[in-house]
Length: 198
Image 1 (cartoon, rainbow, N blue to C red):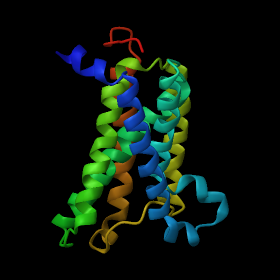
Image 2 (cartoon, rainbow, N blue to C red; image 1 turned 180 degrees about the vertical axis):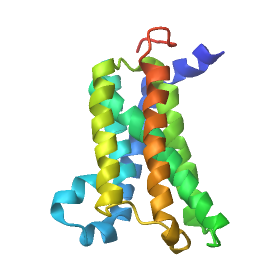
Image 3 (cartoon, rainbow, N blue to C red; image 1 turned 30 degrees about the vertical axis):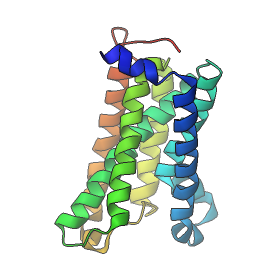
Image 4 (cartoon, rainbow, N blue to C red; image 1 turned 90 degrees about the vertical axis):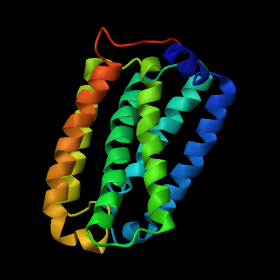
């Protein structure tokens, strides 16, 4: 049953649809960050738009999949960041509502789209060919990004209702990074994982 479902995700038509959806989402994501990027020092640009950069990694992976090719390092970047920022955005939007903010349609759109990001990482994991050293490289990038976000204050803007909780968000984000790395190891790196060919 699982194999039959996952078989769909290597079909060219499905890959093209997901490629276009992620490409549009990536472009929209960078546009979403335009106001924050406008006041961000240029040397921090690469660290600010977390979610669209995660989906951009997946765009590169899907392009390679269309040619029946793997790009393991890019797959590692995509898998870890899709899970991390997919979950992060869902939690932050729900937390904002719990803290007293009124959730608008944009919040529900962000919850749905970011949940889809994390889900894609899991669904494509059997097709990835990530090696341990790829995950080490991504771990350095991911944890370094957390330092930039919460030591240098470059983290994605959050709802006003969460301003007082930014240190807690930073702590949560660090452990979410660790969780995402271990999750990707479990589903896409370990020798006994479930594996499929493109």
